[in-house]
Image (cartoon, rainbow over all chains, first blue to last red; front, side):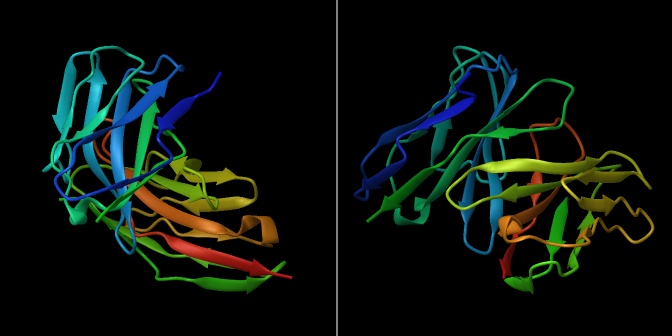
Length: 112
Length: 112
């Protein structure tokens, strides 16, 4: 099993460009989440999903869109990248009723 | 709202030294508490957890006790190894397991 995979590993964007960060899991977990990690700020929740077709906002949702059409995939979309979105992005999954979240390896995004 | 405060790092210790990383929290309701570890270049992994007051979580020689009276969940290890060098995050959840609130992280460096 691959667990939680994220692509790409690294990405550089210019201000105003759009892109999608991919997250896929083969653990059959109901819950999936996106976090961003910034120096001195820990991880902050962007969006999360409790099942296919259901998404909700986290602590810092502005500038990001998500959708969950399948259990396995939870893409994060940046419609118009800004330098403030330079960060490391982590996808995480967990099974309903459990607390252990399984994290992907992360995507390092730089917006110039 | 919920918040987690961790001691600032970096913490530098010699191998076999005793480790304490302080963590205090504020939360609505009755939180579950977690320590996650992030090794260089990787995503986060759950290290240990405690779901109610006075519970002790333990794993790989690390321990933390849920202290409701002092709203604390300090991480301890009696004898650290070089391989313990990583960033440690304290976190809590008061609702769905998808919504974790993280501290800012404490970097531990262990030297020979």
